[in-house]
Length: 314
Image 1 (tube, rainbow, N blue to C red):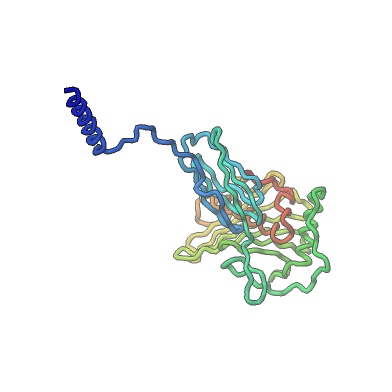
Image 2: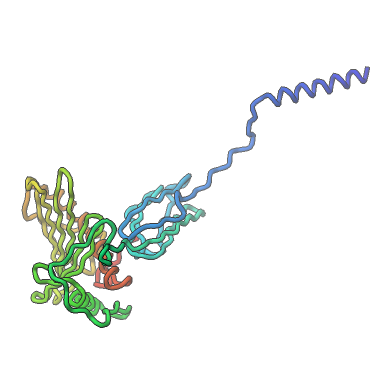
C-alpha cells in the first residue's frame, strides 16, 4: 500500500513537471535597465563639416551638461537635452563629453583637413575648386611669416595678417591683395587695401535652384582703428524681384560668432525683421569661415580671437 502511494506521488509530481514545462516561460526577474550611451563613440569629420550625436536611453534629460575638450577643433552648433550638432573647425582631435548625473559619456572626434590635390598639384578643398586669381603674386618670401607668439599683442597680430596677405596672397581685380577659402558653397575672403590701409572680410554665398540668389556679407576695419568695424549685408535674387541690404557697426572686442547686431535697413523690399535675421545668421557663418581661413593659411593657433574678437562660446 505504501509502495502504491509512493508511485502515485511520483506520478503526480511528474505530471506537474510536464505541465509546467509546456507553459510559456516567464522572466520573473526584472528587466535590466538599458544603459545610457552615445549613438557613436568615435567620429571622423572634415574641416567645415557638421555631424549629429545623440544620447540613447537618457532617463534624466534635464541634467545633461555638454562640453568639448578643444573648441578650436570641434564646437557645438546646437545642443539639447538629448542630442547635439558638432561642427569641425580645424584639423586635430577633441573629446565630446555629456554628463548626466553621475554618468559620463565620451566620444572621440578626429577632424581632418578638407583638402585634396588636383591634377596640377595644387591644394583645393573637397568638391569646390578654389577660384584662380586674376594675377598671380610674384613675391614669394624666403621664410614664411611665423604665427604670432602668445605674448604678441593685437596690433602685432594684425601686422602678421597684413604681411602674410601682402607676401603670399593673390592680387584681386580691384588691386587689393587677398586670401580665400571655399567651403560648402561659401567663399570666405580677407583683402587688404594698401592705399586705404583697410582690411575687408567678405563672405559670399551662391544659392542655386529655382530661387537663385547671392548673399554678400562684408566687414571693413581700418588699420588705424582696429576696435571699430563697419558691416554691410546684401541679398539679391537672380530675378531681382526680391532684394535687400542693411548696415551695422561693431565693437571688435565685443564681437564673436554669437553676436546679434541691430541692423539698419537701407534698401530693398524685404522686411526689416527678415533682412536683419538673415544678416545675423550670415555673420555667424562668416565668422566661422574666417576663423577657418586664418587657421588654414597663417597657422593653427591664429584665430579671430587673436585679432581682438571675443572667443566663441562652447
